[in-house]
Length: 283
Image 1 (cartoon, rainbow, N blue to C red):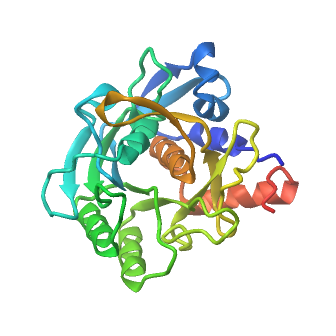
Image 2 (image 1 turned 180 degrees about the vertical axis):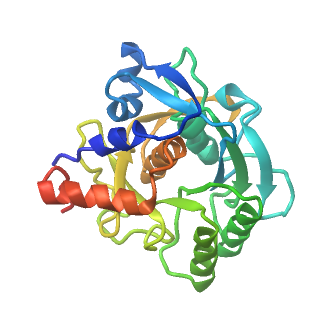
């Protein structure tokens, strides 16, 4: 089963911005490990238009370790929605992994972020045991709205539709915030919420062979991105190889931050084109 993501490349390279352009190169040696970046930017070089006002990305997760490794100094603001303080220490490493896919600086290692020219807003909504409460997620989204972010990345989800979650998602979208969410690792069962909402970009995972990952959910998935054997940076500057739809969501968040054309309508339109041509098998 093949899942072509060429439209990721098309949309990411057709920005109409007139801001200063920066070229980033991907070495041949990088592609053996960082296959995800190479599969999106196939010509091994891509341009990022560094805007005067950088895109603000709120990462709702377990916190971000920005004191070690490639994310040092990358976080602009921090908020702990659990304690309602600015202490967001990441003891799980999940939020740091997501952030490294989105924004790790170019370096001599194989970890490379999609767009290093963003402002990261670290919003801790998952506790140190890996549990997430709906009240904390709602609080985190509300804080993101108040701080006028451009994109919210949610690399987790809930199995049930919750009115308070839907209401705050709707409020965020009304404030021109794009929400990207993992569809979940549900092995053929329905996607999680908020990914299942029509106004949220729902992301599934593909592997090195451009096939859908076996752990994917089935149903409302708007776009697929690399999510298996992904090299990431964990807390304390450690490097790991991980898999999951949560990582795929981070790729899409990074790409959307490059190109303003990536509205949810455009994503669905391109996805439907691939379905009709047979290039994307959604079965």
